[in-house]
Image (tube, rainbow, N blue to C red):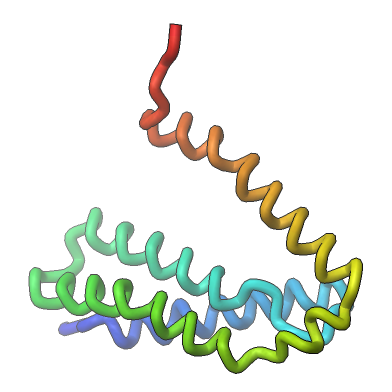
Length: 123
């Protein structure tokens, strides 16, 4: 079976969109919250998992790496069509969600550093 990355990309994108829509529904928000980001994270994790299990050959791995690399420019292009004016009209809600999401990501850095063992010990 040959998988060159497109099927995995499509699965991750759709799963991310479903997760983003579910999150938007949970917060009573008429939109997708982070669906593309969830898809990107799933693509990274799933690609790594498949590689560790050695379920793919070199040709398929190259395809997955290609689509992983092209995903970010696609996300930037997709985000360019989003309704920025409506988000800015959201006022304090949009600002609060942005600040909280950023702080949450900053709080995860030490955890990920500890989990990967890449954090340096200072005396």
